[in-house]
Length: 58
Image (cartoon, rainbow, N blue to C red; front, top):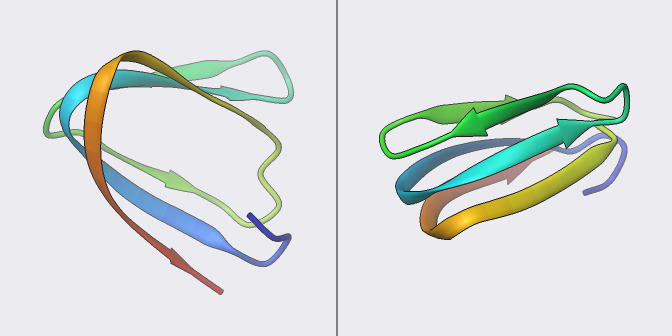
């Protein structure tokens, strides 16, 4: 994602973990959503095969 883009996603099935640059993380599973702000630095780890819906906007 670019420095001005943000993402909002909802997990439909499976599970993932989003790691931030400071060493923190958040797990997200079915029915849960997560907002990723502009300028976010980190990594997306798939813990279980997953399907998600998402929107990226500037």
